[in-house]
Length: 246
Image (cartoon, rainbow, N blue to C red; front, side):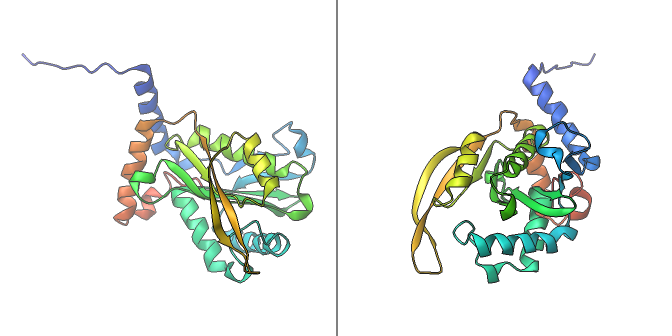
């Protein structure tokens, strides 16, 4: 006779196991997140599209980056000469492998960009950080940033269950963005004085804000740890499809 041992799983464990398996099969993740053709959102009266970024978006993202920095020098950490095509390609690649990058288009023109990605190290792999968000300056205060954030957080909750916390570090002077983050549920954790040095020699504070993912699943995080282990060993080609959120 054979002795069998049965392990009873809680409903949460069962759900997490199913979700972990689903995340392993994310080879057909949709590219289009939101568009004027598939939504009744009032913001989408214009010909608007939000989709996952690709490396081919790098030149247009760089152009938006430089435009935002030239107008709002106190909102981004990079100075304008530090925004190069290799830099943009690098952050897109990291978002592709370990996070999510979304781009927004209005009438075919790139007007928004939001990216974040986790650490490559397992001890911080549950934190989505390295956040950059930009909106075309002529479209500011018209709801486009809110829509981009709504789409991004929805993707995190639905498809990135390994994320427990999303962290963002806005400049204290960027009050407009901070108000948006607060409306989206971000909470202030700390203020870091003199964290940013500006070109004119003055120093500014940076805030640490965070939001938790209500759909976090530890079992999915363990699957993500396995993925990161294989990334470190160089298995990029086969595995990038599984967690290619960007």
